[in-house]
Length: 185
Image (spheres, rainbow, N blue to C red):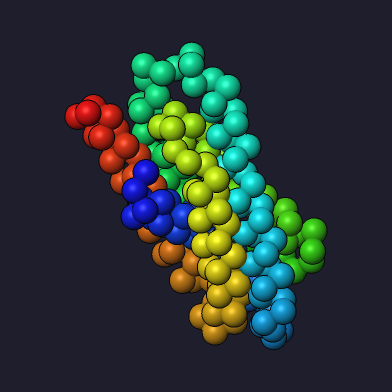
């Protein structure tokens, strides 16, 4: 994958954490830097681990599906992206995803990272460097979630819906690019 594709993927995987962090910030009495960084660290760590788990599962199955791997990557990225767009559209305007406790933070981080696991599976089929991509996703998520908590107090959760929808569209486009690259190679 090119550096641009990795950056698009990292940002796309981070927008649901950004949306959740906006919600956390919107309901916080005061958005402190320490709290924001803690949320960013939890979201970033979980978001970096889950694509590696998905990638490992994909590598185990890669030999069985080598002839159609690009179609699988296209379908998975399309489904994940479509789900992100659908959830962004269905969430009531101003709704703040997630709660304020530490357990709720972890549960929200795991919930927002499940799409990264599915993307990890598709990355195994295209021989992507999972370590670089996982680090990029983790770093982008840390930055976006930390910023999301801080900005959330000012803007509220409405902006999170737009960011999540745009991230979903970017994933669908990335799936299309992978398909076209493999069909024209």
